Length: 116
Image: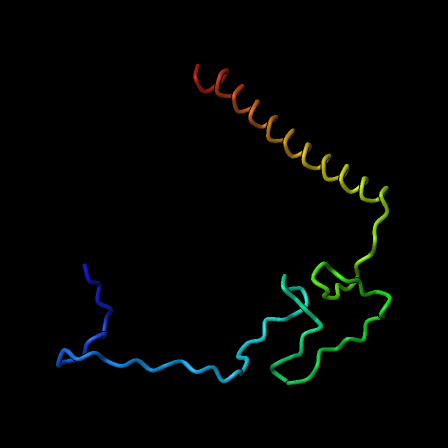
């Protein structure tokens, strides 16, 4: 089975040549903004051609696994890591408990009110 694209052939049945895309390197809308998930302040701002502002203190810059700087990162002690894990566990168990209570109340409503 052959699937033809729209406007693939001209009026005479000859194949139409498509224009090739050439990237000129201009940035239409830069997405490297503070607050965005992939924000990387050490990259050069391509729209203006200037280097990004790296005025942060060198003591406040930690290296990640890829060797890139990560601003505002601090090394945590074992007690702090344990406390974060315990807090995350408590939050997850609280959410699970809320779902279980709502499910139990729904079953009780169905049994005693709805299906009578």
